[in-house]
Length: 466
Image (cartoon, rainbow, N blue to C red; front, top):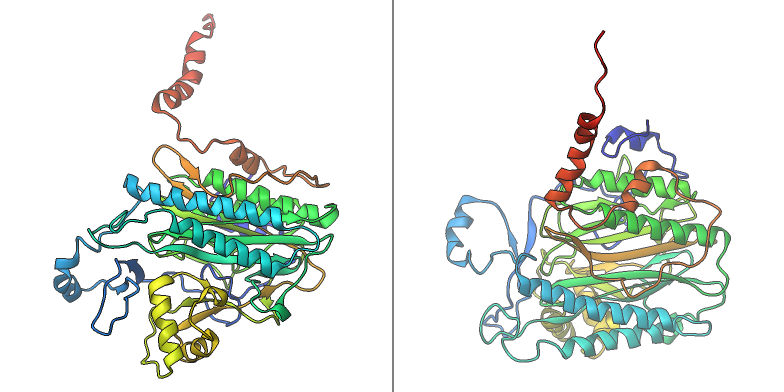
């Protein structure tokens, strides 16, 4: 009898390629640089609040650090209503997610179509980011539109800058200067990763496209990543366990003889929070693991599946990092005028979400960024890469886990890989998961299925007694 999902000891007995102990990462950034232990839980989580002005004229990022304590709950009782978490139970929140997803889907398709032989990665990334900004500017334009309070203007725009990582490069390649650029060549495998947001409700997506013929190990790794993403999405239902989904990803990787990339996490997302506490690990190891969690109704997840033909360990590459994110727990009285100008712009446009240097309007922003980095006010997202000669594939989608159905809202406009592999999935549990619907079964249909065996037994002719 095949092993059932949910048995923790199964992970120790599954071969998924050259499994080695890994180094955990900064959540959702795939940052493998510091050898730190991944905390099993985070007792504190950043919660979103609306932007508010302070005496110094800066616009506060709208993010506060909340801690469970008696005195804080007393002091902040007046703000309880304002700080109440907005979820997809509210139709207005769902509308914002879907508006962001429509922009993300169009931008992702535009970038995928632009990935042709001879194209400049820098040009594609720049045009795509400009498109996202322009499309976001068209929605919720009037003062107070979509805002929780009358007169407020919501923040909207890029939630994750366009990155195009080629072949063994795993993440965060988004060149700014001409000397950093790369031209796409025949045979390249391109991973396009981007996202947009409306009022902090984020919709991200990633897709992998192969230029030219795609066979052999290229086909294996792309199909494995796509199949694992589809399986994870089908399993993402209320009551599902995170380790069951991780196990399914491991089984699919083993079937295609590839390796899930260490350090990649699929996070629960909330308003202005891309890396919530609840995670699904792409590849749990003894050193890098998270506390198991259960999927619940009205949660939003960014499913991020990354596979490699190599050992599944990305390292910091030599290319310059251009993607950063505010380290909200760090504060410092900046000295340089440029640094203060950059800080003001980040608070107004990128209060808590990743950004690319090229998106900043402050003149010569790198000088200001350097001071912020030196004082821990920014988290750098370095370019990450597998060993030379390996191929990395990625598929990412945003999913709304609702009571009636799990809705996949990004990546829907792109076709599945059309090529084939010599390998296929044969595990019965994985095949069963892939065959399921994302819709919740109606009670009447479920009762009929349960009653069918009993009805058949009652209808069977009874044996005569001697």
